[in-house]
Image (cartoon, rainbow, N blue to C red; front, side, top):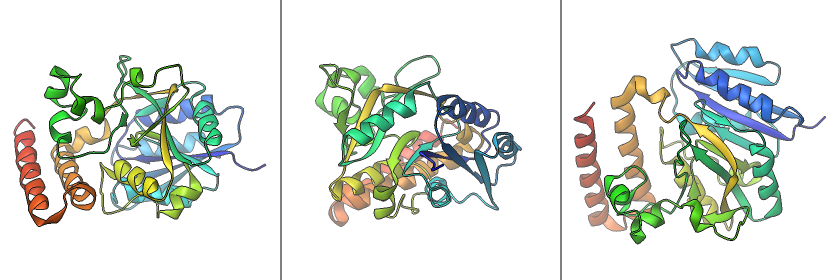
Length: 285
């Protein structure tokens, strides 16, 4: 029987969260032919072995070192064979019916390359996983910024994070610029045509970059609020908090230098602002 959907999870010290993620997949995909590939980036907490309990549906690939998120996802996609691939963090859990709902929207829109669910915090709050293309104001009005929290109705704030209210009319999905790589269903043919994730991003921002490159090829991205997933943000990165902050800002510069900051002056400004932001953030670690 052919495999309908593959899931790829990159594990790095996710602990028991990996078990919950894989169990949610097993529950949601119980009536489908599916497979999953767990790429372990040299975890030291023994969590990689949890994948073995889900064999033969789930295969484990161990990397001798931490190669980063994007490169590991590309490994997992190459090791799978289904026409659609669910890329999911190990600290994320899909709710019942999520994959079927996502797949239905992907199939309904031929030009769509990526769909993403409504991602929730464990307490039920909406994380804001559908977003507008990052620009020079994203650092000020981005998803986690104080100014966005204080002034949510400003155009810059509304553009950076797409609210469910923006969909309107009960539409099952809406076109957005990009969706979070914490949980996304991608069309394999489109993903492979653009070379998958840019492995120059060690972690963070590779999802925004992927969606932007797919759109440049004529595809589009859709947000599907009827599908839901729960994401415990940053569980793996807590053990290497300072390194994660540096990686975030390095990747942010790569994205801005590639897609936003035109010319050496703007790139220099982006570099200076991101270095200052990184320094300020590290003060609290």
